[in-house]
Image 1 (cartoon, rainbow, N blue to C red):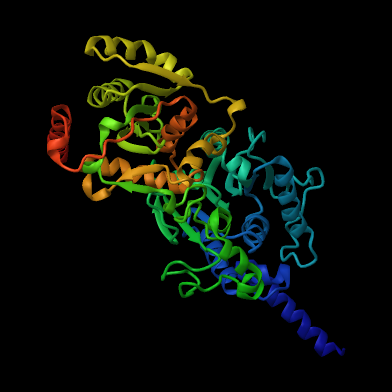
Image 2: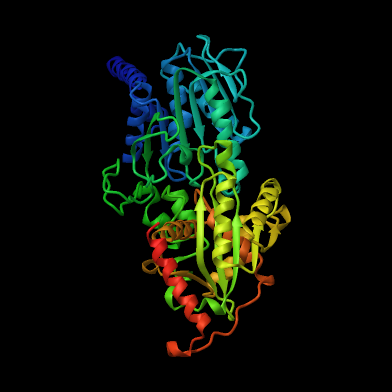
Length: 519
């Protein structure tokens, strides 16, 4: 190689170095040596917009092993530090161990021979994976969402990478709530200056922090959305493994793969055909698939309310109580009362229900109304703190309204398993064709709204945002060994064979149905 060639190489190197300082795409190419596929180019465009202050808050949803962590948790923090060596960056993962691993990657790029900022180095006294600084006063701190210590570490950039990680955390309401409170109280209180936020997720559950910010009807499309609590604007880049919308950011057609060369039909086709929660949540970024996780649409049987002989049923009411509305929660649980009838073959019929977010006086009065209306044999309810607090008030109202029914509490403890395990009895009944819901075209409007919620929660269980109606039904399922089946139904063929009591019952049902249609 002569002097001219060497000089040309030096010029090309200098041009590439400066281009990497200006362009995140060129930085990616310089540091990795890869030619980026289309979805990486789109992601790099978003990263550039964030650094140029066109976007302050962003969510990135991508399948596993599609380079989202490399792009947004490793490369982007390093690029930000290179361009702004005096800034403070905070990296958060699900555990301290994984946070340290991410921090080590960021630090590694700053030590890489291709690092385009020779003047931005690591301070000699702070070079740990989870905490390092620059001579210009900038710093990077990494920690875990659960058990991490972010106190005393203010930052202008907050990178959150899979802070809800894995099925165990995703399915735990307590862990999801802890992650949300850590985000709201600890992480946001550390932000200052430019106050940039990035959530980098493979979505496992609708109730993850992203799901609590996005609209309840979020359908997986990329674009601008407002925080439903604060009104702040977020840009969402949602890239499912297989395109589901016609406005896909990578210009794919519906059904096209995101990265066909590496993760296309050959690699992921079998998993796509298998479907279910893993495919829907991890690869499509849709944590609640329409085809069902435990319960499927073909398990739901239908009955005609006008042809059901309620005199042959034993009636029960099952309730899942909530008081979160009183605590001012932004996305509170629902209280659910579910009236169910059991026939002589142990078929279960949903007769009536009420679902609402309300204070205890409201849902107690709704419970009283349903008990008066249907006269259940027993009332099944969740034991624990809520019923201990509301129980005396409920007893007082029962005496005042002259409503008397045997109430039975069922406790949910660690011995009774998680939600999925507690739902097995209900799942068993449904899979045997024993769960009957009313025909949608033959019920009053108020009940249709509640029925919609039950069917949606049933099919999305256990990954849906809410599952209160399923919890109420599950309580009844756990009581199944103590229920009394109904009487054998009389096979009458003509009205004149019915008793006077039967005729009055049918007449009352029709009057009640007409009045409820006008609610």
